[in-house]
Length: 205
Image (cartoon, rainbow, N blue to C red):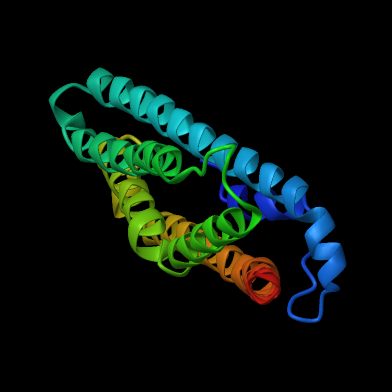
């Protein structure tokens, strides 16, 4: 799976200014930003779900080829499919919450606000629902393969085991950092812009 998917979504768009954004610019750019954001989230969900299914299939086959010793790969497949299933559910949720073509600008702004708040919650809790199951599956794969590598005695090599665990920890910590950076540099300023735009539209009613 691509740890940079979250950052890639908002990096394709112009960085939000935040509460200091010009209100007229926000009005003019809203529809284009709304469509781009919706497409980017859809691509993310399909990409992550597809990658998860393919990874689960490949690892399941690898575990099957290992014979009875590969039974821990059942847990790996379940963890990865769980993450993939989350993105599938997110896509259904997005379709249910999508506003119709007859919706007013205010309704669209409020829908975007709700979506951005949802994405913020997901990113702030990504360590629980995304990183933790992937990290656990990685540990299971390393432990299972290492236990089978008797000819190299890797299972008794503390340097190998420690190095692999440290590498996995660094990769997953970097993924956590990326998501936090997206929240502070992209989502929070965009939330401020949408709240400012909503308040302006409410004042015009």
